[in-house]
Length: 206
Image 1 (tube, rainbow, N blue to C red):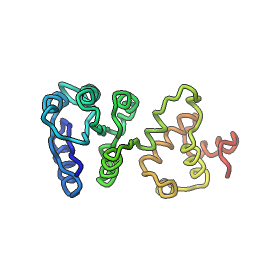
Image 2: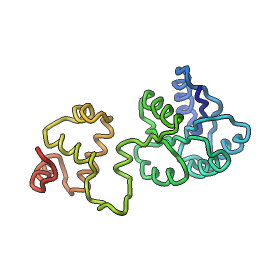
Image 3: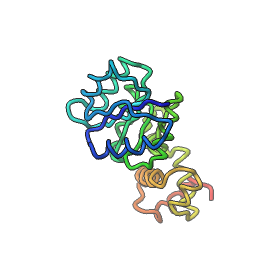
Image 4: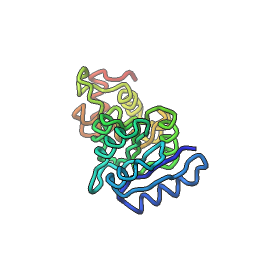
């Protein structure tokens, strides 16, 4: 049984995800809190394995709460709840010990997958976040990652977003994120110009 704590200042969202989590017999909710300070105050008496942590909250944000919580209990597994536009925080949250990230519009099976992986000692970082916000100083920031090349190859083959998602076994949102970042890196304005650029620059093998 995985014991889960919820930390999010939006009551409706918190109640919704709590109800969905409770449909899984392998999980139990052991606490829910509307901000980081409430969570930290309850931590000495809280028996939790996994924490679902919002980033932006009043009184104490997710980064501070994660840092303090892991100082108190290094065995906690923190999964960050993000909005799509908050992915730039992934590096910062990783630096304070977060081991998982879930976009708030993910389906519940994605949530279950993330919980299972981090509870077993792994990390759950969405593919789009891993490639879009991995700032490796040894790599050229304009160079395409292996996953981006794979997506670009599919685009050049005329595949639709659902087809690419199915082939690469990633979500449609992840495909869209890759596409946007590829356009940004290549300086192209649309798919047609991207295909021409990719072929001329020999970025892909068709």
